[in-house]
Image 1 (spheres, rainbow, N blue to C red):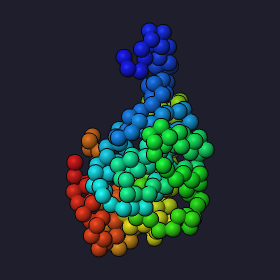
Image 2: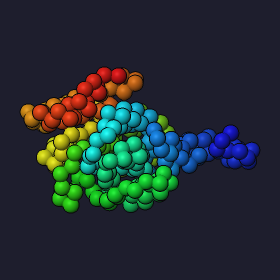
Image 3: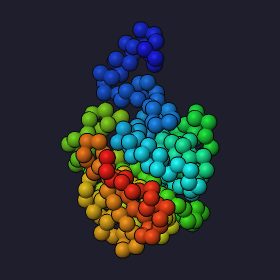
Image 4: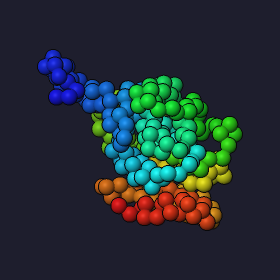
Length: 242
């Protein structure tokens, strides 16, 4: 009733949905915590699983002055929610896709927020231009190709970019190799327990590593902070318990 006020548009929307076009593409946007983001076919649609951990994390960071980097930003939903909720933070959003960067810029304007945007290939990038940061967050591609074909809905397989979906441990290896030396803490979305185990195994003894399950009981986040960092120890106290 709010989005499709004209009967002709209702019929048009039903035809699109019958072809498995995602509802967010039909309606054009998706709420995400404190913001509303435009959605386009070339960019991953925000998921409730991501919204869940981001909203909880944001509430724990309240009042902190942080330098934050959001990798694989897509629509910009994570970066923009953090920027909206944490007025003292400075958030940089990074993606290799020109379509994603353009859409994130549109969403920043739509939500009246300033966001630093960089088009970079995360896996081939040495982020010296950023320097050290307090927190790195990322929702990387983490679905193996065979699992995407076997388990994903038709609307995902046909209408969302494989670039943002298909992967395994590439971004977690990049986290260990590139980002751990540059940050105090990190939160990465995952699709399986073995991706969490990879980070735990390779992070090093100076890191406190945890995992968090989503509301369905599935492994959804691997997070960590430097041993002895009392500020982030407070932030993540109980974070892995829903």
